Length: 435
Image (cartoon, rainbow, N blue to C red; front, side):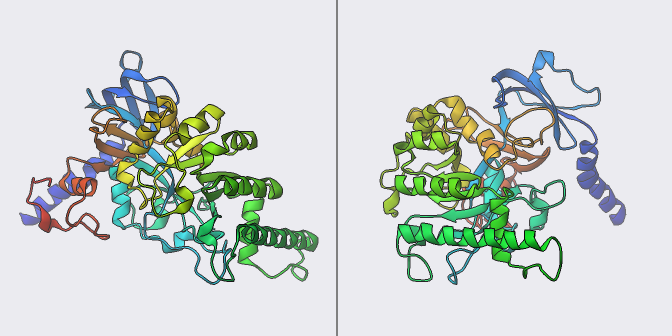
């Protein structure tokens, strides 16, 4: 009898979700913010097999006959948030042996069971660009993660059609990378070292071309040069940590000189050189910090940066730099930017589709459109209200966060045990208590 009961429970818990995946699911009656189009006051979102199959007004969006119907009246649905610059997962990049280390891969040091990932889900984040640190001129390869519930980094990684893990390259300038040799001591030497390494990478590529596939003439494999060539060949976007106006222009100058794709990150003084950034056609991922003490380069950081960049025509996103700012408070970046003059539409765009474009993933994520991944969040109210809560987060149609679940609620609000990496201790609440 005990075994019979166990089998029934197993079927209820595990077979239920599997069967649900075989049926379309329709979320009905919510205010939908698709990002790619106008707000739908009372809309319908239909998902199936991890993809969006329909989105539109409730009275104009036919439902599949077998669709599971979920009442979302009074709620808001919008795309999952895209964080272009995060450090969740506890990963480390390059070490102190050299200032430029493109052979280091952050994927080799990420713990996907780190509680930071669950906290990001609680903040409505569904895609993150996980970076090595910024204490190097080039600290290694980043990785683009979809915040699924997975056991390994491969379970969360974005892959291209050939199966390769997707990511960019992290670079930096300014004072972060200035220290004793072999690191540079000045801004000019910082740029000189970068040029030196890229020139060597170009020479390495020339040797490969001249060898024409002859093993006897091929140079020895060089992981540093291979990493740099992925940048020079356009296979990796450079995500460039930079604050001061002169450092921003140096990053743009290097990008033009060597032809690599560039996203500027932080840009504390971006408002000073917005026209130059716009002329270069370079996107910016902005950090919004309401207490910028501790870094002299951020002393001229202004909340109006997003508004100034928007007016100049610069593609603008926000990021958390978690743990500099908390992933659970990502909406605050957009709210503060709107308060300082950025338009509401572009601020929400900056949390979603703009970031997707910077990661070159806009065909899959960042907006609610048929054919895209079913990454979306359900909110209790207006996304820019301080009172609004993320109620649920979905990745490819699967619920990965539910605020009504006591364990998920703990990740959302903090408290004892919320930062345990491997699991949430059950000692800190009674059954049914969501403290």
